[in-house]
Length: 447
Image (cartoon, rainbow, N blue to C red):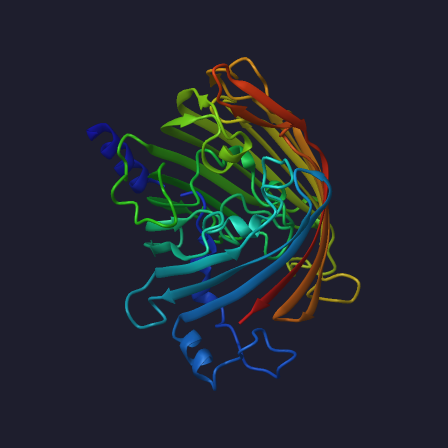
């Protein structure tokens, strides 16, 4: 225990993955403007009679959104039919310097919840085809507080953070210009939003702490993050009852901006390590088989990499244009079922004369390691390699309302549905799972 505490302290002093280091640059950025007429302003509710803009100038902002999705497996998979679901999110950000308190401090509180039923269990895929519906937890139908954190910078080069951390946010861990987020703005499939190789070792919401290094002062140019965090974190609990009880995880990630051919791009790489004892189908993967004991394995590691590169950029640094992206991930393969992973695709922002529209086409492939079972199914392999393709186009009806048709074709990791019937002698029932075609329509509203 003492060794863990010492190592944790060293990490805090020296250098977190998955936090928004761009927050430090917010001090020099103008406050957002919520004013404007109904169809052109940035949010549906506007500036609240001037109050919202006044608070923004003092460093206090409220970001509110509701993302609704209707999706259906129209062929293949394990079940057909439409399902409607949604997720709401409220984030409070406080800049302590602008508020007149102390310099370099940033406080974040996030409240979110999902409702109704998604089709994530009906495709035969290991990865959710609707990422938006797994946050803060799968099918919880309740509000949770996944993020209550403070970040403190001591110079333009160095900052620390601590608290209950939401590790997957719109501008942080495994960040990518064309393929990232919670499924509310770009792709819906988890494989095209974050690297699934890290999913076993990085809980979504967990207690942790770490530091951020900005080698050039500018977070847009280069960021290095390191952190230590609890491997048992959950969005619906505070985490203090399990923190660092022999389940400490560690992570490091770095991202750098490139300028190949005079066009904006980024390169990112990171590693994670967990001391936790896992079953091979822990966390979101438990639904693939309903019966059977899975052997436990101690510790797990993963490596992740991604890049994005503009190929057409009408104005450098504008965030508009067309480019390519890719990811690669690797893990120990046991207990982590995602042994290797890669994805490739093309994305666009603000083209075709519509500055707020986005589109993307992506492909992914996962090399799957079958879990080790005990009991009557111990010699059977239920999983296969998974791959899929997704295409979407996001229409900005207004700056605060975006409608996105989406289509996916996924050959899931689940080869067959399996149930073990208990009798004097166990009987295994199985049925093949075919490639699923999934269509969907997403509506995001920003309040």
